[in-house]
Image (cartoon, rainbow, N blue to C red; front, side):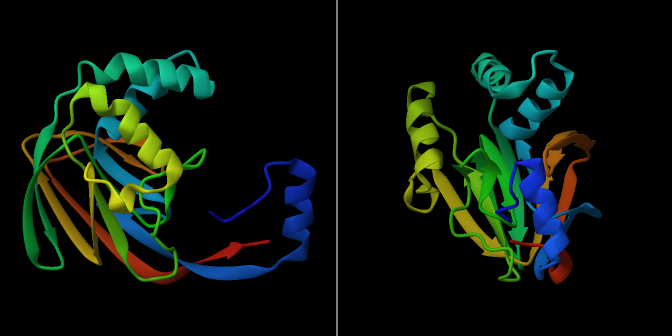
Length: 193
């Protein structure tokens, strides 16, 4: 989302221009993030992938297909800016930006400059609908899908039945039953093209 070139030479040229912008950052149980934090299947997968010897996109896809068959949805109680929601979910992602990476969009309308977090709830689904979910995320149409609910907010509290895996900007961690995310508006200066 920052459009920093993958090519090393181009990235160094960009750094040398020293053009900056200020974006939102956020906290997830006091751990800073600027892209995504979450729980559920994507956190489970992040933890499994960190232990797997096969790296790269192909390894990630193979592991995803293996793990999805055994994963069980969880019940969450969310409080978003004082409004309570009770949801059973495959995954919950708190998004400051729009995508996981590789053009997989979980929150297509999220902005790193709006002072809000997008809470993306992937609803339980039959495995036969996995290709539909993949298509929705690759096409950037999660906002209009009946498989995903998105609620915007500044202060998010999430309760779950037990401790478990989470991911914070892709880093797998284990956290407790009570989770909290807060936006920190226009707090991070970054180099941009």
